[in-house]
Length: 425
DNA sequence: TCTGGGGTCCTAGGACCC
DNA sequence: TCTGGGGTCCTAGGACCC
Image (cartoon, rainbow, N blue to C red):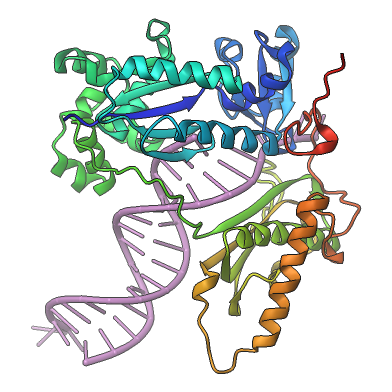
């Protein structure tokens, strides 16, 4: 039996989330902006039609936005994450096997489902649209890489009506189609590789499909070699339906304005380390190290640049906010130099292992570990009940002069009681 | 004035060992 | 003049993804 893998991908997901709760945005040109209202991270079709590219700085679009009445939303990740969970949960009930691939994409195993797959996919689309208000497109093929391409086709061609099934095509028709798609569209072929491939005369997906795997392995890597096999319908990348624990946990942000003094940086670093450690505890892990970096604004080319980083090893792996913050502060004081305007800081937890596999030693201070665990559990419980940040370390501060700008943020309709959507009669 | 955030995997090269 | 060979582990950096 031929393998059938579907890729379900939400259409301009963040914009679609905003539209679910603000129907007046329907049919209008809408963008969602990154943190600090910096760059465009999601564009409605109307905005794509204006030729506006992904990741363009918003301030460069002010004119065109005014002319066309583009509506800009600040990003509201709490809302998107919640809607994503609902989409994924619904999908999990519609297929025997699921891999949640990203916030807005999921692979589904359709092999063995007797309903014609394109028809089945249309039912999935209708169900998600009806229950959650989110539009999706679906690509179906015999490998993940091909399913991604099929999804691309489904999105681009109105004739597909949101679904494209490569398995239903003849080899010849599929090859003709692949010949019309640029090699850069292939999953795993980024800017660098596609430029090199082009230079080698490999311009279309079909060219790559027909390449010698050995040659590609020699000139690129095993990764791209595997891609060729996948393009030829041999499934090499399996569906993984457990989300593995993170091996590193990052919290980094640009500041709303440049920071020049150490105390403000210390506040930010404590805030970021606190967030990262919360994520760490959520996956029941402990970290053996914490890496910290600060950096000036690279876009200010004329200014002197400074972007140091430092890695601190913990005596023992831990999930205690106090210990990890202390280590981060210690590192910050080592790399901080006055005289620079800092634009961004980030912390990364590394050497992450499950809490359950904490190495034991004779010298463990069992009581201290238990106390720490109890305190952190309480801290998390209070913050869950009272809202994130209700209880925090004093060093994080309350006046965050450096906090990000968010000009037009929607309410957290689904996750905060105080921001529920109330419809009056 | 204004340029995101969070991840994974692979490879090359150095340190170190026998 | 001429300086082995093979293996492992770790790290930094590149490339890619959404």
